[in-house]
Structures are given as structure tokens and as C-alpha cells.
Image (tube, rainbow, N blue to C red):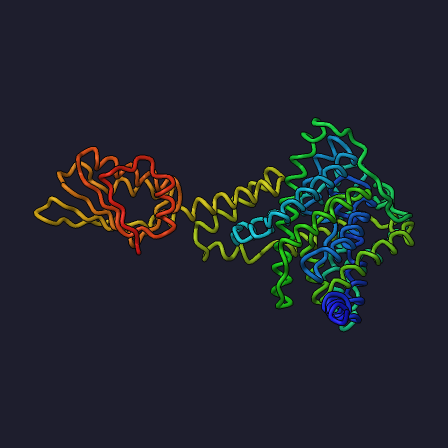
Length: 505
């Protein structure tokens, strides 16, 4: 019993109560800062502000208990909202909720099968391309709100947006006070006060839809449970799952580095999945980890799960208690915040580094950006980047194959020395390195310094051996390591008595 109590006390200390004062304060700051972003992301997705607010509350609370990275903030995000635009436009909110639930199921399954480990296969070029494309899409989503050709947009909106950006970037420069209150909140308060005082006729958040006045309730998506519904939501759910986990894994890695601690990436996948199932079941859209808010939380002193829980609970308390006031916020204030997010998200160093990074790196990064921006599909952009990275890597490794030869016994015997990696990309060069028309009695293929990686490599070896045997040449395969020996034993198509195999041992 004493051991159990000790374990419980240790768990609470490490995960919840070990940094009580700073976790509470940082959670309050993040909860305040989540409100404008959750509303803005809802608007990007084309749904009522309460959908993003409910999602942020549900996801933050659930992930605080089930996530694999303490102090990381998860909520409604721009990356996910961008994927939802077409689904909401074509099929409505209920299908978005259904896609959010299915997204959560997919993420949970990915976590069960430990697919969080796949993050190590995403190259830095893909990550930077993903971040830059996300920033561009966020900025592009704000342009309609600044288009003065629209009837409901005036030059005053642009002026307010510029003023909002000025406040956001200049307020933090004030001594002491500038670091106590998030500048986006100051921007919202000032712009809202100006609009109300002068009675300015500009678009407000309340014009876009209902804000929450109660806590979220269980609301199973009202869609037909049939194959047609699945065909509609599955592509979006898959894209949401992949993009959500990618951004969450990236954020977890960043927080790991900031706090010098490790996190459980597969537990994070499962936690993100469950949180999105809950969000979709309570009237919220799917979300994931937030890079900006997580960094704010950590730099404000947040270190445990308590900070994430406080942020989510404080968010919903503010929204329910102050929903009438939130509806008065001018859209210009949210546009300014989203422009700030896009500027802060974009990796500006990547532009300078185009001159210094290898061409292959730049191709991967720029391809990820271009495909994402053109298709508005972050998952497709990431897939393109990962595929290009794999092709470029395989092409480079294939060049490390070297085959040399020397003759013995009056030219009747020849030894081929194979060095390097034999796999699908180098199998053709491997075959071409052997002269099967040479009049020989015996050929020794020395592979002590080579490795056969896949079935294609074994088929290439089989072709070389078969070609020599067809010419009546005895073949000796010398120096197979255990892994290569296993593949040869299992996949060599035409083993014969004339082939002698000697392993590395």
C-alpha cells in the first residue's frame, strides 16, 4: 500500500503539482490567448466561432490527461482548419463533426501501431516546407477580409488591421507591462473599444455566427451511417489525421528541446485521437498541437499537464461568461492576429539558406510548399516532400555501389569484389558490372563488404548467377552477412548445384 501511495504521489508531483504557481499563471495566459485564435480558425474553416471554441476546450482538457507531452497546448489550429474549408462548404457542419470523429479514430489506431515513430522519416526540408506553406495559406485566407471590392469591407477595415498589427508588435516593447499581457489581447481590446466608441460600421465576430453561452453537450454528428458518408468524409479525415499528427509531433519535438525532456510520441498520437473523438462528439472541430501557444506556455513557465488543463478550462469559462462581449470584436482584430501568426510561422531563415543548402534540400522544401499552396492540401504537400526525400536519398546511396574484378589462373577464373549497398536503386548497376560473355571457368563474387537490402537486390543477384550458369561458369558467392543470407535463402529464384554460397562467418 505504501508503495502505491508513493507512486501516486510521485506521479502527481511530476505531472501535475510540481510547478503549481507557474503552471496556473501560464495556463491563464494561454487560455486568454486561445480565444482570438480559436475564433479566427473557426472563421477560416467556415463554421460558427463556437465550433472552434468548443473544440479548443475539449481537446485541451482531454489531452492534458492523455497526451504524451506535458505542457504542450493542443486546440483548434489553422493547419486543420484549412483542410476543412471545402468539406464545410460542400456538405456542412455535421459532416465536419463526423470527419473529426473519424480523424480521431484514425489517429488512435496510428498510435496503437506506434506510427508516431514514422516522424523520424520526415526530413527537415519537408518540415520547413510544411511550416512555410502553412504560413502562406494562413495569410491567403485573410485576404478576402481585406478586399475592399467587397460590399461589407471598407478601407476602415484595412486601417484597423494595420493598427492591430502595430499594437501586436509594439506593445511587447513596453517595459514590464509588455511582458505581462499577451499583445494580441491588447489589440482586441483596443480595436473593439475604438469601434464601439465611434460606432464604426465594420464586420464583427457576432456577424459570423453564434458564440457559446453554455458548456458543450454530447452531440453525435447527424449524418447517415452509410458507405456514401464514409466516402465523403474519409479523404478529409485521413488528411486531418496526418496533418494533425505531423504538427503535433513537430511541436512535441520543439517542446522537448525547450524543456530538455523526452515525450512519448505514440502516446501523443493516441491522446490526440481520443481528444478529437471527444471534440467531434461535443460540437467541435478536429485540432492538434499548437506550435505558437505551446512555446508561449513553456516560456511563461508551464512545465506540467496542469498548465494545459488550466488553459482549456479558463478558455471556456471566459467564453460562456463573456460571450456577448466576444461577439463585438471586429474582424480586423482577428485578421491582424492571423497575419501575425502567419509571419511568426514562416521560416524566414529558409529564404537566406537557399544559397547555402544543397540543391536536393531546396527541391524538397520548395516542392512541399508549392504542392501544398496549389492544392490547399497540407497532407499532399507533406507526402510529396517525403516521397522526393526518399527518391533523392535512394539515388545518393545507389552511387556508393562499387564492383571491381581481378583474374586468376591464366584468366580462367575471375573474382568480383562488391562494395556498397545493393537495393532497388542500385540493382541495375550491379547487374551491369558483370561480364557474363567472358570465357571463364569459375567466378567468385565477394560480398564481404556489401549488403543486400531487398527482394529486388536478390533478383539482381539471381539474374547474374543465372547468366553465368547459362554460359557454363561455376559461381561462388562469398561473404554473405546474416541479413543478406536470410534474403538469399528465402527469395533466390533459381538456386542450383553449381552455385556455392559461403557466408561471412
